[in-house]
Length: 116
Image 1 (cartoon, rainbow, N blue to C red):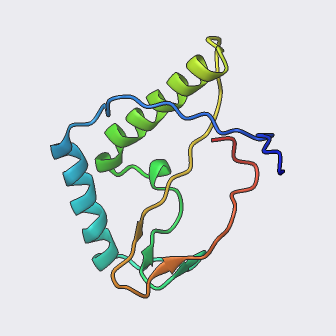
Image 2: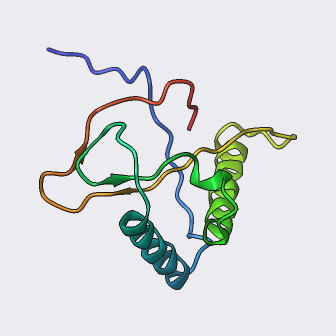
């Protein structure tokens, strides 16, 4: 009989999104426009469009509230899972990917050095 042991569990928390559906829709529309108007890059994507660089490091006002929501989620995760409430310094990298057809996909890969 096989013995199942969880050595590396992944803790998941859930919370209500800080952004309203209208805000998320506006971000999605903006990303779709970017994918049509800007040259992308090829990393793990086969087909589709992958934004260049870190979209949270730009001065694009469309991503400010999204970055704020992601930051709040990270702080909530650390406070609830690691029970850490002190000062925390971290960086966030984000990108957008638009798959347009049935053949578009991202190859399996990892993000070395990423905690969350």
